[in-house]
Length: 551
Image (cartoon, rainbow, N blue to C red):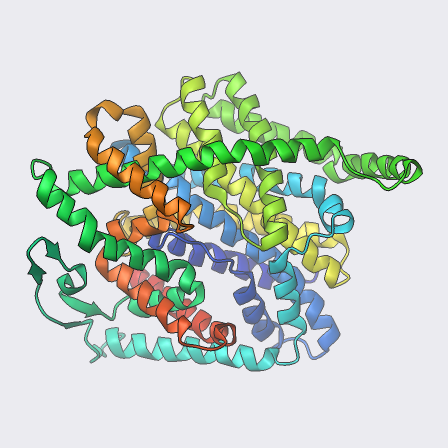
């Protein structure tokens, strides 16, 4: 392992953990950060290497290590922060002890990350060599590293980074310089017509403090996030608010919208809950049955598969994982049967998500985390902290499995040995786990969960689901039914109800910032060509925000 590559890998791991920690709590979507890391690595390594063939291998190793922190932080932001909304008093006690908070988050990250890597080791040969799954993110990173126009894209990334840094400096100032660009520009006051209040006109101002970041995120995600958010805003104007004004005036707006959204979350969970077992059953069946062309080929492949399985799992790695896993859950007083339950179902969920990620490049963590979490709530005597730990463990381990296999695909395309890439991926997990707790503590302590900058919509969605299942009798059943019906219609229309919730529930400033960026992407013929620029804009905004918070 070269010292320069190790240093860059550690820097990328910390960077991806910081950036995705913020993104996962700021917006309800977690884009893969590996392509951005590849461009950053190209810039960093170009300072030390002149040989193009050598630099490509080192970039691939550093990116494979650094990207693990991104998915790890995304899952933590989506699921672990649910604890704040479920039990704010206990969460604040944790926050009052920074070292213990960091220990809980870091140990959870390490155990679930190692679990995900262990699963990836077992199925790597099957998915990449036998099934020849594409793992699109691994291929995209490989193309980014080897493309002839990579240098131009690196320059575009730097232009985005420098331009937004200059904008932030002129806006906020630094030292004695106070800046002259206003934080916001006032538009006009709230306007309404009869029952239809227009949320767009409720914005007191266009915010320049964090809108550039939202524009960048909206542009990269494009219609995937813009359309559902617009549906949410329109539904709020013509449906949700009028129903509240006509039929549920006895409920405050906050009680009503939380109950309505809880119904949406519940119906989405039920809809996914009934679809998930079918996919998992196919996965389990695929573990034991394979179609072969003839008997001789079947026998030879069976011997090879069994040998590969044992080699990839690794006896020492398996023993170490078992000690970490059962030791961690025992420390948090999980019943033994629940520990076995979590191990088995997390394994199957990681396997299934790896298949999906291998085919389409996406990792739908939410429905699988829900599938494991909900039965555990009723099967075992567990508290809110344990419920959150289950969902987070499944989310992190499944996401890490997918990301590790993206890295293994990159290694296969770059002619890098598996043993070498594995060492760097372990390094990425360890570095990210060590810093994740401190990063989350700092962000939450400075910006506050539930604020405009850390709204944590995914965590609030899970809070509403758990709260509805635990305390269903305290909700207005009619409002829950209306929300559930609306969520079911959205699911049938192939529109993500959980993203529509953003338009209904998130502060309008965040919603519109993302929508503006998403609509901007629709106006560009080839938006992928502008990804480096907007990645630079986002990176600059995130780093500036953190520096200003520290200083």
